[in-house]
Length: 218
Image (cartoon, rainbow, N blue to C red; front, side):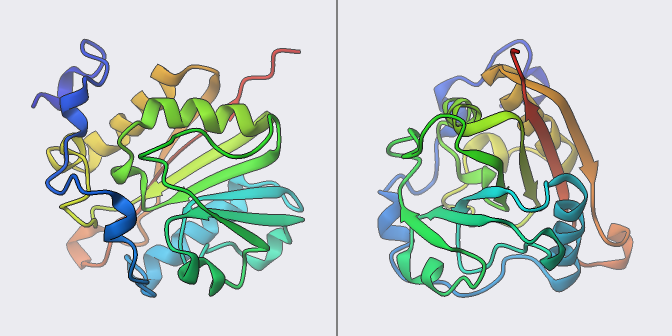
């Protein structure tokens, strides 16, 4: 698989093959109340959120779990989680409500147009089977100039990560997510950052982010 040629071949279906093609709801049926990156990487997510998310907004935590890593300073008006395990989300102290929904079976989001000020997705983009369609749906439910921010590391459940992701390195992961935004359309100010709390030579989990704003037509 040539991950260098994203602009020449915009995400054909075989890029999204997985080792385990069983229904995701079965894989995630058992609650995993654990974090997937270390404390320093989690803190880096919080610092990024404080920097790019609006204070007091209505937020959607996409592919949510038992923690959302939102800094207290944001004081969101409401946080809604969308994920696969109800028990995990019920134990998330930052969620006001949650919805069980499998994006890989139905990428349509069960929300109205222009419903959220921000959507975030932490360490889960590697599992999206229909990312371009999902990014378009996120664009639909965001208010004009709303932000979609994705954070990711090099950690994953390999059997559920898509082939394109498994074949790529850290730098290519950034370009893959940037490519999802570009292919989906409707996004401006696409920005990428290495948020790793310390150089890889010193160990610890790396952390990267790509975010963009919904294009405002008026």
